[in-house]
Image (cartoon, rainbow, N blue to C red):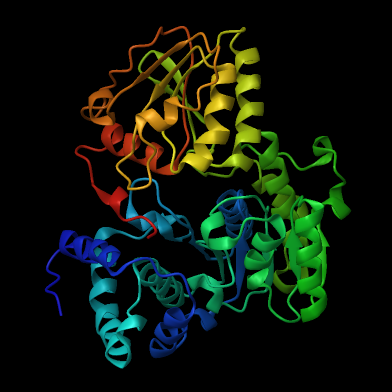
Length: 434
């Protein structure tokens, strides 16, 4: 058993779990939860899956509950800068000393199940999921909002028995694991649906909706569609302070969930609507001032997100008096880049490609290969360490009268913020989902 005498030692040990290979399945988490005494059964929860929008929807739901006096747990992934962002109670992130103590406590249980079968040793994500469940129980939360990591059916979080299951959207992403059709992906995400538990869904394509409806019928679940409550015109959807019309879809999902569990928790829906105007969820088309220029951080990262990136970039150009932004982009996987880069090129004055320190990051040549023929702006590449060499220093050499947009991956945003806002890089970006 390793000696864990510091957070850094615990972080490095967790990172070493990557060498055990990718593990997508529920058996390990079921056994891990069992030896821990099923801490996730100590509080009610909301379980949220989806291709896009699940993190924002979780943040909205957490705010709704907290504003009405509930002690709230929030479990999301991945994190932006600090590992503890994944586990929050009343929006206070888990500190590094707490993470160290939990790893020390959980390690003997992990070793116990590994003795039974080496293949049962928990992965990094399973460690974090168990840590969240245990922390929420010890903090006596009134409700936990839990985001699915990947898919749903075989995700570690699927040991939950929620008050309501939520599916925000279905798109073609992680196809190598979840399937290459909307119906197949819907069935994987629909794996979180439990017998008799109500299901709330966002604006799904007919193929995906059909698959979810079939699962609900099989398992005797009420299916609640936001379009039945709000129609298809987004102008009729709830307002939220998070930017972009897609966030109004997420707001409608959150408000619908609140309505479904209204009697269970005694929620006031008018207060819930006001809470949607006060949501904190960083990096989702977040506009900031960076030195003397406007900079937008956006985690649009796949083909479904490309649609909303297109809309937001068009709006930004209008709001900037016709000035096109300089776009900094780094993407995980060529199939995502194929959707995102052409959208960026449609609105960009220039494109600057970067590679986050992640194994799946597209190379410069791969990114450049998706720039449409005829793009008239400058196309260049750079290392993030050169662009953001230390805290408060930005070497982006763009005209100050044009906005800057940084987009393409949550890992990219996190790495930049780690370099620009922390005294020294924390290096916790390596602790992502394996």
